[in-house]
Amino acid sequence: MQGFAPAFVGGFSDSTGRRPAYFICAIIYAAANIGLGLQNNYAALMVLRCLQSAGGSGSVALANAVVSDLVTSQERGVYVSYLSVAPQAGPSLGPIIGGLLGQYLGWHSVFWFLLICTGVVFVPCAIFFAETCRAVVEDGSVPPPKWRRCYLNTKLERRLMAEGQPVLYEKRDELERKRKLRFPNPLETVKIVFTKEAGFVLAYVGILCCAYYATVALIPSQFGTVYGFNQIQIALCYLPLGCGSLLASFVRGRIIDARYKAHAKRLGFPLEYNRQVDLSDFPIERARLEAIMPNLALGCACFIGFGWMIEYKVNLAGPLIFLFVIGFCVSASINTVSVLLIDIYPGKAATASAACNLARCWLGAGATSGVAPLIGKIGIGWTTTFFGLLAVVFSPILWYVMQNGPKWRRATKLRKERQKAERAAKAATGNENDQQLKDRVVSS
Picture (cartoon, rainbow, N blue to C red):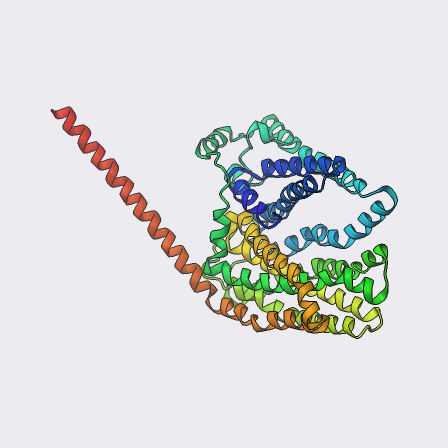
């Protein structure tokens, strides 16, 4: 559900707006937490957990979409990395907070805590978070419809009216008439998964996440068995993983943007801070992906080393250091791919982010479910070696994308322009035929 739900949310937010999508996700998430806090039936808990996941998982895709609305390609790396801080801190802090709440207040208290956190985040967003979707407000100059305005929108409109400046209500009404409220179509996300421009990159991200989630899935069982840790001690072992991810969030974004600027300077490509430029003739794949190759090599080596350290029961410091490096390398790689997808699909950023989430979650879930039987057959060391080598073997996919990505994007752009011209010609022919028919009717 965590992989599939953003496919609905992403398409809905790209066409209807970010604020309605955020509100729907928050309401679903809050309602699920209330049900979980009051429930003891196992079947109901499973259903409500799926509902909770559906409400919470779409927020990451929406956050990437907001960055796409507000920030151009040359600054996008920093912002995407910064917004990943909270999602990456959650898996590290969550087990600690959940373990403490569960131990001292009971497991129901975890969901009441999440409900409180939802309210703390939702109320300020409802008041201050302005609509950013280009289909609704264009570049921000068009006021949003009344029912989705925030306090900042109201304040801005009053200031413009007081200064005698125009408020584009006519443009707002025109955009509102053009938009049609449709049921979200998850197939738009699936289509992105099977395009050349994104499909190969998403396939490799899924393989990388297989190795990552398989490694993380080892922590509870193996640290409890090998080191004799209790629930709280095991939860604390997630901290190095989270610290590595946080470091990647603060460091990696600047490297991503620096590589973009270096390529732009070398090619004489314009650097724009206030508008999005056409990247059809810019090697955005190489600018984004070439910097993650050292991270992938180091991360794959740490996947392999981590398993053998657990196999031979070395000092705890060794596995924890490797977890820190794994967290850094994987987070840096995924953040880079997220930026690349937004660059390739600037008008469908939420849908593209949902496609990335789909690949990560579904392949990662498969690896998590298969890691325990694999350990039973070949052992911990060979299990992590298998996943680490899997990521190494498929890494040439990224070089293939860097080499051919611009060509694929240009071909897609030409095909869309040709289809648009054909539709326009067909519509013009239809209008001409209708006019001739009317003339014959009048003459008769």
